[in-house]
Image (cartoon, rainbow, N blue to C red; front, side, top):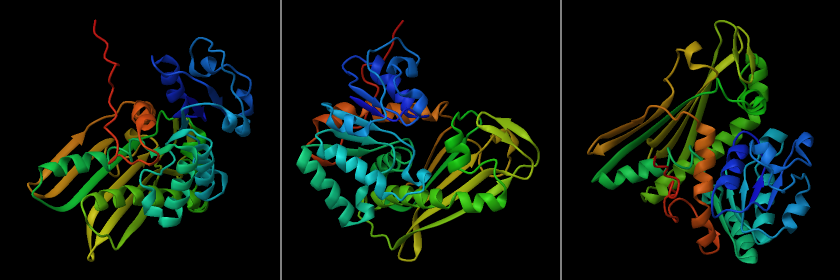
Length: 344
């Protein structure tokens, strides 16, 4: 196994790979110069492993490994487009390594045939498989709705809502640079433009996956977003939120079919939910309008970063065993916590 990036999600994944029986760590790629040369176990808060972290991507490409957990910040953070992530993933696949990524690609077909052809060609060359995953998208906005439609005789509209609290999120790169919290309204409008494009692509994949699975032809995926300003000053793990700066945002993605919404995904991000009453409280909600009407809620995911990492790590056996090519959640067994049960 190779761990590609050790940020907010990657560090949780690295800890799982090191700790889990049946998985062997082969290498770790890092972006922070301060991590280069450190033992992987040190980064994960575990005992030394003998695996030294490197920032040399060519060295990782040449390494013999079954699978890469690809978990960097999206290319939009670095001011480049999504193609940069695609190029890296295709290079890894062509080098003979299966790839599980959290940078999107839950449904590459949403990007059109040229992207699919590039990935499939890389998979054919390396005899490898690509799987994109996460909590949302990757589970809440696609797997769960599809699972529930198994109880339906008619589906009229699917609604999914995520509300996330970033109070304890440790990454300033994510909370400030990408999501845009702590910024002035003017600065926010400028800085989140690349992230807005990434979000639109990410959730359009998820909506398109559900629509295709249910044999619904979408006309387009519409997107709207808005933000709220802090009424007072408060501290979060990523920094100080000053009065009048951005402290919450709300995104709505609507898959339109025949002029009406077929699937709606609402995504709410809050710097601190206790300080922001506007919009929904943290948790996930799912409603399916049809026959029958169905609703479900996940009141809390206590550690979303750990959940995203676990979903990727749990998919490793299925991805490595799968035939070469793109494998979405429709093509693989549901990753579970098999082998992780602890009985007193």
